Image 1 (cartoon, one colour):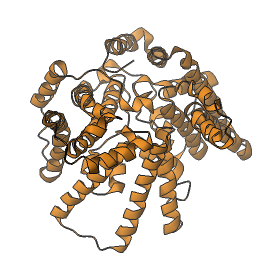
Image 2 (cartoon, one colour):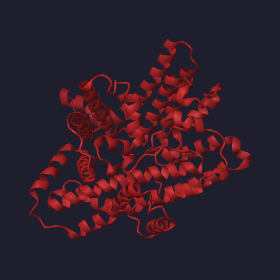
Image 3 (cartoon, helix red, strand yellow):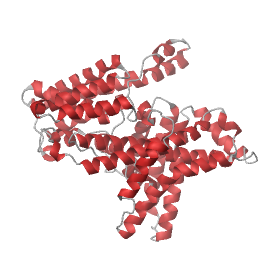
Image 4 (cartoon, one colour):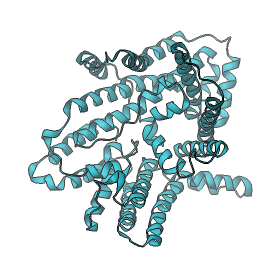
Length: 471
Protein backbone atom coordinates (compact mmCIF):
# COMPACT_ATOMS: atom_id res chain seq x y z
CA UNK A 1 0.00 0.00 0.00
CA UNK A 2 1.71 3.16 -1.20
CA UNK A 3 1.66 6.30 0.94
CA UNK A 4 0.48 8.26 -2.10
CA UNK A 5 -2.54 6.05 -2.76
CA UNK A 6 -6.20 6.55 -1.91
CA UNK A 7 -6.47 3.30 0.13
CA UNK A 8 -3.64 4.51 2.39
CA UNK A 9 -5.22 7.94 2.96
CA UNK A 10 -8.51 6.19 3.74
CA UNK A 11 -6.76 3.86 6.20
CA UNK A 12 -5.11 6.79 8.00
CA UNK A 13 -8.41 8.68 8.34
CA UNK A 14 -10.51 5.69 9.46
CA UNK A 15 -7.83 4.71 11.95
CA UNK A 16 -7.73 8.24 13.39
CA UNK A 17 -11.54 8.29 13.68
CA UNK A 18 -11.64 5.19 15.88
CA UNK A 19 -8.30 5.90 17.57
CA UNK A 20 -9.53 9.10 19.25
CA UNK A 21 -12.99 7.87 20.20
CA UNK A 22 -13.35 8.36 23.94
CA UNK A 23 -14.97 4.96 24.45
CA UNK A 24 -12.02 3.26 22.70
CA UNK A 25 -9.25 5.10 24.55
CA UNK A 26 -8.01 1.92 26.25
CA UNK A 27 -7.73 0.13 22.90
CA UNK A 28 -5.59 2.63 20.99
CA UNK A 29 -2.65 0.24 20.59
CA UNK A 30 -4.91 -2.53 19.38
CA UNK A 31 -6.49 -0.18 16.82
CA UNK A 32 -3.07 0.75 15.45
CA UNK A 33 -2.04 -2.91 15.39
CA UNK A 34 -5.13 -3.81 13.34
CA UNK A 35 -4.44 -0.92 10.95
CA UNK A 36 -0.81 -1.99 10.68
CA UNK A 37 -1.86 -5.54 9.81
CA UNK A 38 -4.24 -4.25 7.12
CA UNK A 39 -1.48 -2.01 5.75
CA UNK A 40 1.08 -4.83 5.62
CA UNK A 41 -1.31 -7.50 4.36
CA UNK A 42 -2.55 -5.26 1.55
CA UNK A 43 0.40 -6.21 -0.63
CA UNK A 44 1.70 -9.41 0.99
CA UNK A 45 -1.13 -11.09 2.95
CA UNK A 46 0.69 -14.39 3.52
CA UNK A 47 3.80 -12.69 4.88
CA UNK A 48 1.79 -10.96 7.58
CA UNK A 49 2.23 -14.23 9.50
CA UNK A 50 6.02 -13.70 9.43
CA UNK A 51 5.68 -10.19 10.84
CA UNK A 52 3.44 -11.39 13.68
CA UNK A 53 5.67 -14.39 14.34
CA UNK A 54 8.71 -12.12 14.54
CA UNK A 55 6.91 -9.79 16.94
CA UNK A 56 5.85 -12.78 19.09
CA UNK A 57 9.38 -14.18 19.42
CA UNK A 58 10.75 -10.73 20.23
CA UNK A 59 8.03 -10.33 22.86
CA UNK A 60 9.02 -13.58 24.57
CA UNK A 61 12.77 -13.01 24.36
CA UNK A 62 12.63 -9.40 25.59
CA UNK A 63 10.24 -10.28 28.42
CA UNK A 64 12.56 -12.92 29.83
CA UNK A 65 15.64 -10.76 29.26
CA UNK A 66 14.06 -8.04 31.39
CA UNK A 67 12.73 -10.14 34.26
CA UNK A 68 15.40 -12.86 34.41
CA UNK A 69 17.72 -12.39 37.40
CA UNK A 70 20.25 -15.07 36.50
CA UNK A 71 22.95 -13.45 34.37
CA UNK A 72 23.68 -16.58 32.35
CA UNK A 73 20.05 -17.15 31.41
CA UNK A 74 19.55 -13.43 30.75
CA UNK A 75 22.45 -13.50 28.29
CA UNK A 76 21.09 -16.71 26.75
CA UNK A 77 17.64 -15.16 26.14
CA UNK A 78 19.25 -12.04 24.66
CA UNK A 79 21.44 -14.14 22.37
CA UNK A 80 18.47 -16.21 21.19
CA UNK A 81 16.52 -13.02 20.44
CA UNK A 82 19.33 -11.44 18.43
CA UNK A 83 20.17 -14.66 16.56
CA UNK A 84 16.51 -15.22 15.71
CA UNK A 85 16.22 -11.78 14.10
CA UNK A 86 19.45 -12.26 12.16
CA UNK A 87 18.41 -15.71 10.94
CA UNK A 88 15.04 -14.40 9.71
CA UNK A 89 16.80 -11.57 7.89
CA UNK A 90 19.47 -13.86 6.41
CA UNK A 91 17.02 -16.52 5.26
CA UNK A 92 14.59 -14.26 3.44
CA UNK A 93 17.10 -11.76 2.13
CA UNK A 94 20.37 -13.60 1.58
CA UNK A 95 19.67 -17.33 1.21
CA UNK A 96 19.51 -17.02 -2.59
CA UNK A 97 22.90 -15.28 -2.65
CA UNK A 98 24.53 -17.83 -0.35
CA UNK A 99 23.19 -20.81 -2.29
CA UNK A 100 24.19 -19.30 -5.65
CA UNK A 101 27.75 -18.89 -4.32
CA UNK A 102 27.75 -22.53 -3.24
CA UNK A 103 26.41 -23.47 -6.69
CA UNK A 104 29.27 -21.65 -8.37
CA UNK A 105 31.83 -23.70 -6.41
CA UNK A 106 30.10 -27.09 -6.50
CA UNK A 107 28.78 -26.89 -10.09
CA UNK A 108 25.60 -28.64 -8.95
CA UNK A 109 23.43 -26.00 -10.61
CA UNK A 110 19.78 -25.20 -10.21
CA UNK A 111 19.65 -25.11 -6.40
CA UNK A 112 19.96 -21.34 -6.17
CA UNK A 113 17.12 -20.86 -8.64
CA UNK A 114 14.71 -22.47 -6.18
CA UNK A 115 15.49 -19.87 -3.51
CA UNK A 116 14.99 -16.98 -5.90
CA UNK A 117 11.28 -17.84 -5.67
CA UNK A 118 11.25 -17.01 -1.93
CA UNK A 119 9.50 -13.61 -1.63
CA UNK A 120 11.32 -10.75 0.07
CA UNK A 121 9.01 -9.40 2.80
CA UNK A 122 8.88 -5.62 2.56
CA UNK A 123 10.31 -3.91 5.61
CA UNK A 124 12.11 -7.01 6.89
CA UNK A 125 15.43 -5.15 7.15
CA UNK A 126 13.75 -2.54 9.31
CA UNK A 127 11.61 -4.59 11.69
CA UNK A 128 14.33 -7.19 12.38
CA UNK A 129 16.68 -4.36 13.37
CA UNK A 130 13.97 -3.02 15.69
CA UNK A 131 13.64 -6.46 17.24
CA UNK A 132 17.39 -6.54 17.89
CA UNK A 133 17.17 -3.06 19.40
CA UNK A 134 14.43 -4.20 21.80
CA UNK A 135 16.34 -7.23 23.08
CA UNK A 136 19.70 -5.48 23.33
CA UNK A 137 18.33 -2.34 25.00
CA UNK A 138 16.67 -4.39 27.74
CA UNK A 139 19.76 -6.57 28.18
CA UNK A 140 22.05 -3.55 28.50
CA UNK A 141 19.89 -1.33 30.71
CA UNK A 142 17.16 -3.45 32.25
CA UNK A 143 14.93 -0.40 32.62
CA UNK A 144 17.66 1.94 33.91
CA UNK A 145 19.78 4.82 32.61
CA UNK A 146 18.65 5.91 29.13
CA UNK A 147 15.28 4.14 29.48
CA UNK A 148 14.46 5.11 33.07
CA UNK A 149 10.90 5.94 32.03
CA UNK A 150 10.42 2.58 30.33
CA UNK A 151 8.99 -0.12 32.54
CA UNK A 152 8.18 -3.46 30.94
CA UNK A 153 4.70 -4.66 31.79
CA UNK A 154 4.79 -7.41 34.40
CA UNK A 155 1.79 -9.08 32.78
CA UNK A 156 3.07 -10.78 29.62
CA UNK A 157 -0.11 -10.18 27.62
CA UNK A 158 0.36 -6.41 28.01
CA UNK A 159 4.04 -6.59 27.07
CA UNK A 160 3.08 -8.72 24.07
CA UNK A 161 0.65 -6.04 22.82
CA UNK A 162 3.27 -3.32 23.36
CA UNK A 163 5.86 -5.29 21.41
CA UNK A 164 3.58 -6.17 18.49
CA UNK A 165 2.67 -2.50 18.35
CA UNK A 166 6.34 -1.43 18.41
CA UNK A 167 7.35 -3.87 15.67
CA UNK A 168 4.36 -3.29 13.38
CA UNK A 169 3.59 0.46 13.75
CA UNK A 170 2.59 1.10 10.14
CA UNK A 171 3.89 4.63 9.38
CA UNK A 172 7.50 3.43 9.63
CA UNK A 173 7.02 -0.32 9.14
CA UNK A 174 8.36 -0.82 5.63
CA UNK A 175 11.07 1.84 5.23
CA UNK A 176 11.80 3.39 8.58
CA UNK A 177 12.98 5.45 10.27
CA UNK A 178 14.39 2.55 12.27
CA UNK A 179 12.92 3.07 15.72
CA UNK A 180 14.98 2.15 18.77
CA UNK A 181 13.07 0.54 21.60
CA UNK A 182 14.30 2.94 24.30
CA UNK A 183 12.97 5.85 22.24
CA UNK A 184 9.56 4.35 21.48
CA UNK A 185 8.32 2.41 24.52
CA UNK A 186 8.24 5.42 26.89
CA UNK A 187 5.79 7.04 24.45
CA UNK A 188 3.25 4.20 24.72
CA UNK A 189 0.38 5.72 26.67
CA UNK A 190 -3.05 7.22 26.11
CA UNK A 191 -3.16 9.85 23.37
CA UNK A 192 -5.69 12.67 23.10
CA UNK A 193 -7.00 14.51 20.08
CA UNK A 194 -6.37 17.91 21.66
CA UNK A 195 -2.63 17.15 21.87
CA UNK A 196 -2.11 16.56 18.15
CA UNK A 197 0.53 18.87 16.66
CA UNK A 198 -1.52 19.55 13.55
CA UNK A 199 0.62 22.34 12.11
CA UNK A 200 3.88 20.37 12.39
CA UNK A 201 2.24 17.24 11.03
CA UNK A 202 0.70 18.98 8.02
CA UNK A 203 3.97 20.74 7.14
CA UNK A 204 5.89 17.45 7.33
CA UNK A 205 3.30 15.75 5.13
CA UNK A 206 3.32 18.52 2.52
CA UNK A 207 7.12 18.52 2.23
CA UNK A 208 7.23 14.71 2.26
CA UNK A 209 4.61 14.29 -0.46
CA UNK A 210 6.18 17.10 -2.50
CA UNK A 211 9.59 15.41 -2.36
CA UNK A 212 8.11 12.07 -3.36
CA UNK A 213 5.38 12.91 -5.87
CA UNK A 214 6.73 16.04 -7.55
CA UNK A 215 10.51 15.64 -7.31
CA UNK A 216 11.29 11.91 -7.03
CA UNK A 217 8.50 10.58 -9.25
CA UNK A 218 9.28 13.03 -12.04
CA UNK A 219 13.02 12.37 -11.81
CA UNK A 220 12.23 8.64 -11.88
CA UNK A 221 11.02 8.96 -15.46
CA UNK A 222 14.33 10.54 -16.44
CA UNK A 223 16.71 8.28 -14.50
CA UNK A 224 15.02 5.25 -16.03
CA UNK A 225 17.45 5.73 -18.93
CA UNK A 226 20.34 4.88 -16.60
CA UNK A 227 19.34 1.23 -16.81
CA UNK A 228 21.09 -1.22 -19.11
CA UNK A 229 21.33 -1.14 -22.11
CA UNK A 230 19.83 2.34 -22.61
CA UNK A 231 22.73 4.24 -21.07
CA UNK A 232 25.19 2.86 -23.61
CA UNK A 233 23.86 5.22 -26.29
CA UNK A 234 23.79 8.41 -24.19
CA UNK A 235 26.34 11.21 -24.24
CA UNK A 236 28.83 11.69 -21.41
CA UNK A 237 27.09 14.89 -20.35
CA UNK A 238 23.71 13.14 -20.22
CA UNK A 239 25.19 10.27 -18.22
CA UNK A 240 26.63 12.74 -15.72
CA UNK A 241 23.33 14.62 -15.51
CA UNK A 242 21.40 11.38 -14.98
CA UNK A 243 23.67 10.41 -12.09
CA UNK A 244 23.18 13.87 -10.57
CA UNK A 245 19.42 13.49 -11.05
CA UNK A 246 19.44 10.08 -9.39
CA UNK A 247 21.29 11.57 -6.42
CA UNK A 248 18.50 14.13 -6.10
CA UNK A 249 15.86 11.44 -6.66
CA UNK A 250 17.07 9.00 -4.03
CA UNK A 251 17.24 11.78 -1.45
CA UNK A 252 13.79 13.14 -2.34
CA UNK A 253 12.28 9.65 -2.41
CA UNK A 254 13.67 8.39 0.90
CA UNK A 255 13.59 11.69 2.79
CA UNK A 256 10.05 12.16 1.49
CA UNK A 257 9.01 8.77 2.86
CA UNK A 258 10.61 9.54 6.23
CA UNK A 259 8.87 12.91 6.51
CA UNK A 260 5.51 11.34 5.66
CA UNK A 261 6.08 8.60 8.24
CA UNK A 262 7.04 11.13 10.92
CA UNK A 263 4.08 13.34 10.03
CA UNK A 264 1.55 10.50 10.20
CA UNK A 265 3.04 9.18 13.45
CA UNK A 266 2.49 12.65 14.94
CA UNK A 267 -1.20 12.40 14.05
CA UNK A 268 -1.37 9.48 16.48
CA UNK A 269 0.76 11.17 19.14
CA UNK A 270 4.10 9.44 18.48
CA UNK A 271 7.39 11.16 17.74
CA UNK A 272 9.75 9.32 15.41
CA UNK A 273 13.37 10.36 15.15
CA UNK A 274 14.59 12.56 12.32
CA UNK A 275 16.07 10.53 9.47
CA UNK A 276 17.64 13.21 7.24
CA UNK A 277 19.28 16.54 8.05
CA UNK A 278 20.38 18.23 4.82
CA UNK A 279 23.00 15.57 3.95
CA UNK A 280 24.17 17.23 0.74
CA UNK A 281 25.77 20.14 2.59
CA UNK A 282 28.08 17.84 4.55
CA UNK A 283 31.71 19.00 4.56
CA UNK A 284 33.06 15.54 5.33
CA UNK A 285 32.05 11.93 4.82
CA UNK A 286 31.69 11.39 8.56
CA UNK A 287 29.36 14.41 8.71
CA UNK A 288 27.40 12.99 5.76
CA UNK A 289 26.63 9.89 7.82
CA UNK A 290 25.34 12.01 10.68
CA UNK A 291 22.90 13.57 8.20
CA UNK A 292 21.90 10.69 5.85
CA UNK A 293 19.61 7.84 6.97
CA UNK A 294 20.35 8.86 10.54
CA UNK A 295 18.35 6.03 12.09
CA UNK A 296 20.47 3.40 10.28
CA UNK A 297 23.83 5.09 10.85
CA UNK A 298 23.13 5.55 14.58
CA UNK A 299 21.85 1.96 14.81
CA UNK A 300 25.06 0.66 13.24
CA UNK A 301 27.10 2.84 15.56
CA UNK A 302 25.27 1.82 18.76
CA UNK A 303 24.79 -1.88 18.07
CA UNK A 304 27.81 -2.78 15.92
CA UNK A 305 30.58 -0.17 15.71
CA UNK A 306 30.86 0.52 19.46
CA UNK A 307 30.58 -3.18 20.46
CA UNK A 308 33.40 -3.95 17.98
CA UNK A 309 35.57 -1.46 19.84
CA UNK A 310 34.81 1.70 17.89
CA UNK A 311 37.84 3.95 17.86
CA UNK A 312 39.10 2.88 21.29
CA UNK A 313 41.65 0.26 20.22
CA UNK A 314 44.09 2.13 18.01
CA UNK A 315 44.02 3.56 14.51
CA UNK A 316 44.32 0.31 12.57
CA UNK A 317 41.51 -1.35 14.52
CA UNK A 318 39.37 1.76 13.97
CA UNK A 319 39.92 1.58 10.20
CA UNK A 320 39.02 -2.12 10.18
CA UNK A 321 35.88 -1.44 12.24
CA UNK A 322 34.81 1.29 9.83
CA UNK A 323 35.24 -1.01 6.86
CA UNK A 324 33.36 -3.89 8.53
CA UNK A 325 30.46 -1.73 9.70
CA UNK A 326 30.03 -0.01 6.35
CA UNK A 327 30.31 -3.30 4.46
CA UNK A 328 27.57 -4.68 6.73
CA UNK A 329 25.54 -1.52 6.11
CA UNK A 330 25.91 -2.04 2.37
CA UNK A 331 24.89 -5.68 2.64
CA UNK A 332 21.87 -4.63 4.72
CA UNK A 333 20.56 -2.87 1.63
CA UNK A 334 20.56 -5.96 -0.55
CA UNK A 335 22.09 -9.31 -1.49
CA UNK A 336 24.22 -8.04 -4.35
CA UNK A 337 27.93 -7.43 -4.86
CA UNK A 338 27.38 -3.77 -5.73
CA UNK A 339 25.83 -3.06 -2.30
CA UNK A 340 28.85 -4.59 -0.55
CA UNK A 341 31.18 -2.57 -2.79
CA UNK A 342 29.14 0.54 -1.97
CA UNK A 343 29.60 -0.16 1.73
CA UNK A 344 33.34 -0.74 1.34
CA UNK A 345 33.51 2.40 -0.79
CA UNK A 346 32.10 4.50 2.04
CA UNK A 347 34.13 2.60 4.64
CA UNK A 348 37.29 3.45 2.69
CA UNK A 349 36.26 7.11 2.44
CA UNK A 350 35.71 7.29 6.20
CA UNK A 351 39.02 5.56 6.95
CA UNK A 352 41.04 7.73 4.56
CA UNK A 353 39.32 10.86 5.83
CA UNK A 354 40.12 9.93 9.42
CA UNK A 355 43.78 9.37 8.52
CA UNK A 356 44.00 12.69 6.65
CA UNK A 357 42.37 14.63 9.47
CA UNK A 358 44.88 13.24 11.94
CA UNK A 359 47.95 13.95 9.81
CA UNK A 360 47.18 17.09 7.81
CA UNK A 361 46.66 20.62 9.13
CA UNK A 362 43.05 21.74 8.78
CA UNK A 363 42.40 24.74 6.55
CA UNK A 364 39.94 27.19 8.05
CA UNK A 365 38.41 29.19 5.23
CA UNK A 366 34.73 29.67 4.31
CA UNK A 367 35.47 29.23 0.59
CA UNK A 368 37.32 26.00 1.31
CA UNK A 369 34.21 24.77 3.17
CA UNK A 370 32.15 25.20 -0.01
CA UNK A 371 34.74 23.27 -1.99
CA UNK A 372 34.54 20.47 0.57
CA UNK A 373 30.74 20.39 0.24
CA UNK A 374 31.01 20.09 -3.54
CA UNK A 375 33.69 17.40 -3.23
CA UNK A 376 31.77 15.29 -0.70
CA UNK A 377 28.54 15.59 -2.68
CA UNK A 378 30.30 14.58 -5.91
CA UNK A 379 31.97 11.52 -4.39
CA UNK A 380 28.76 10.44 -2.65
CA UNK A 381 26.82 10.88 -5.90
CA UNK A 382 29.27 8.66 -7.78
CA UNK A 383 28.57 5.98 -5.18
CA UNK A 384 24.83 6.06 -5.94
CA UNK A 385 25.60 4.40 -9.26
CA UNK A 386 26.03 1.18 -7.27
CA UNK A 387 22.45 1.60 -6.04
CA UNK A 388 20.90 2.30 -9.39
CA UNK A 389 22.72 -0.62 -11.03
CA UNK A 390 22.97 -3.50 -8.52
CA UNK A 391 24.58 -5.63 -11.27
CA UNK A 392 28.23 -4.68 -10.84
CA UNK A 393 29.07 -5.47 -14.47
CA UNK A 394 26.60 -2.79 -15.54
CA UNK A 395 28.26 -0.26 -13.24
CA UNK A 396 31.54 -0.86 -15.06
CA UNK A 397 29.81 -0.46 -18.44
CA UNK A 398 28.23 2.81 -17.29
CA UNK A 399 31.61 4.23 -16.26
CA UNK A 400 33.11 3.03 -19.53
CA UNK A 401 30.30 4.71 -21.52
CA UNK A 402 30.89 7.96 -19.63
CA UNK A 403 34.50 8.12 -20.80
CA UNK A 404 33.80 6.93 -24.35
CA UNK A 405 30.59 8.79 -25.29
CA UNK A 406 31.83 12.39 -25.20
CA UNK A 407 31.21 12.83 -28.93
CA UNK A 408 27.56 11.67 -28.92
CA UNK A 409 24.75 14.21 -29.32
CA UNK A 410 23.32 15.74 -26.16
CA UNK A 411 19.67 15.33 -25.19
CA UNK A 412 18.95 18.91 -24.10
CA UNK A 413 15.36 18.21 -23.03
CA UNK A 414 16.55 15.56 -20.58
CA UNK A 415 19.10 17.99 -19.13
CA UNK A 416 16.41 20.64 -18.72
CA UNK A 417 13.95 18.30 -16.99
CA UNK A 418 16.59 16.95 -14.60
CA UNK A 419 17.69 20.49 -13.73
CA UNK A 420 14.08 21.58 -13.23
CA UNK A 421 13.04 18.77 -10.90
CA UNK A 422 16.37 18.75 -9.03
CA UNK A 423 16.16 22.47 -8.28
CA UNK A 424 13.84 22.13 -5.23
CA UNK A 425 16.36 19.84 -3.51
CA UNK A 426 19.23 22.22 -4.31
CA UNK A 427 17.22 25.19 -2.96
CA UNK A 428 16.23 23.13 0.11
CA UNK A 429 19.89 22.55 1.01
CA UNK A 430 21.08 26.04 0.12
CA UNK A 431 18.34 27.57 2.26
CA UNK A 432 19.71 25.70 5.25
CA UNK A 433 23.18 27.10 4.60
CA UNK A 434 21.59 30.54 4.54
CA UNK A 435 19.72 29.76 7.76
CA UNK A 436 23.00 28.84 9.47
CA UNK A 437 24.43 32.25 8.55
CA UNK A 438 21.40 34.50 9.07
CA UNK A 439 19.15 32.58 11.42
CA UNK A 440 16.23 33.09 9.01
CA UNK A 441 14.41 30.23 7.33
CA UNK A 442 12.91 31.76 4.20
CA UNK A 443 11.21 28.51 3.16
CA UNK A 444 9.20 28.17 6.35
CA UNK A 445 6.19 30.26 5.38
CA UNK A 446 2.66 29.55 4.29
CA UNK A 447 3.22 30.71 0.71
CA UNK A 448 5.94 28.11 0.12
CA UNK A 449 3.80 25.33 1.61
CA UNK A 450 0.85 26.47 -0.54
CA UNK A 451 2.98 26.33 -3.69
CA UNK A 452 4.21 22.84 -2.80
CA UNK A 453 0.66 21.66 -2.18
CA UNK A 454 -0.45 23.16 -5.50
CA UNK A 455 2.36 21.36 -7.34
CA UNK A 456 1.49 18.06 -5.62
CA UNK A 457 -2.02 18.37 -7.08
CA UNK A 458 -1.00 19.63 -10.52
CA UNK A 459 2.48 18.31 -11.30
CA UNK A 460 2.99 14.91 -9.68
CA UNK A 461 4.94 12.34 -11.66
CA UNK A 462 3.78 8.83 -12.46
CA UNK A 463 3.16 6.91 -9.25
CA UNK A 464 5.85 4.46 -8.20
CA UNK A 465 7.07 2.56 -5.17
CA UNK A 466 9.52 4.14 -2.80
CA UNK A 467 13.12 3.15 -3.59
CA UNK A 468 13.75 1.82 -0.10
CA UNK A 469 10.80 -0.59 -0.27
CA UNK A 470 13.23 -3.00 -1.98
CA UNK A 471 15.47 -3.01 1.07
